Length: 146
Image (cartoon, rainbow, N blue to C red; front, side, top):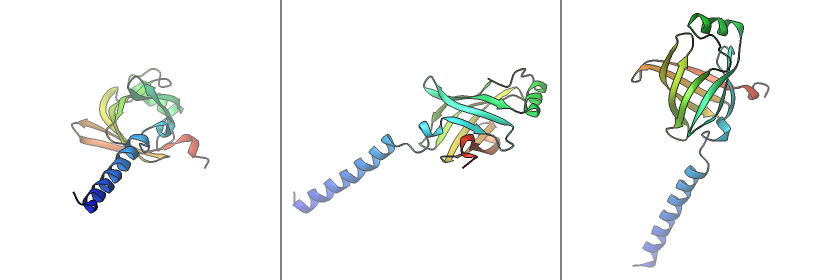
């Protein structure tokens, strides 16, 4: 085999190795950067994302009086401590998929969390198979002061 062909193959393998290594070793926004406390757009609920089993879950750590009253009207007695996000796992480095419990409706829906950057995520919940969806932009709480 000519040396030029071997050199091209080596370069192609090297580039491919770097790309795969980058995906495996530095998954953008799918690791520790996503853990922490996030707030909804109205800043009425704060949810802490943390590891749970093989996935990631989100628990309410703070809610204002109106959000707590809405949850009670929907049949959820205690909003604080409630697990809203269940079994979220990465679909790709920036997008996770799992189940979302909506306390004021007292129902669980399929949902996604797409990490737009280190301080912003787009939360989306859908009724049936990707139809009748609602999206919200959530922000990392500790980034509010920045």
